[in-house]
Length: 253
Ligand SMILES: [Zn+2]
Image (cartoon, rainbow, N blue to C red; front, top):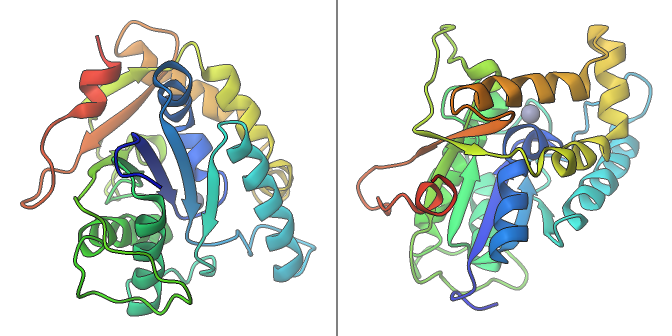
């Protein structure tokens, strides 16, 4: 694939994390600007069931994630980690590097570095490291068909953490909020592809507000820009990473 085709890779810990945090923005990039979209997760969601064995719920959830990704004509990748055992280690990092080298994104979206689940935080760290490592030709992975090093480090954005809080309950203020009013319905359709997770949350937490929770958070973020629905982002601005805020320039008037 060409490095010249604008492409966004959303890489999060579990199936359905992308839909909750940034699918409305991915949909805008895809529909309004013709960007290529790719989606990836650290795990297949193997703990997401009260009844099914890990391999069975994993198969179900990977199918759900692929159906959701297909709504944006997106390729879907899972690096095969395990729920609650996502580590910053060599095997995980090598697999994320290989996804980055395969997709060759212009921009990457991942979890907030501080979030309620360690799988989210570790995935955020893996992505941050992988996009940098992917451009180093002397870093090798164990892939059967390893892809060449990327030519540049993509722009890295962090989506809102769960409920907009860090682990101390303090608000994390996004750099900017993208208006997703025109794509909230598509975001909901993508989320609803994850039928098994909706049922699992209901069973585990007595929570029957999978979709309503997503919509109410998007509405809260939208309120900050005077629009019905929004998604918040922060740009990673560490040394060696691009500082140009291209997502804001593209989607925020
Ligand atoms: Zn998650």
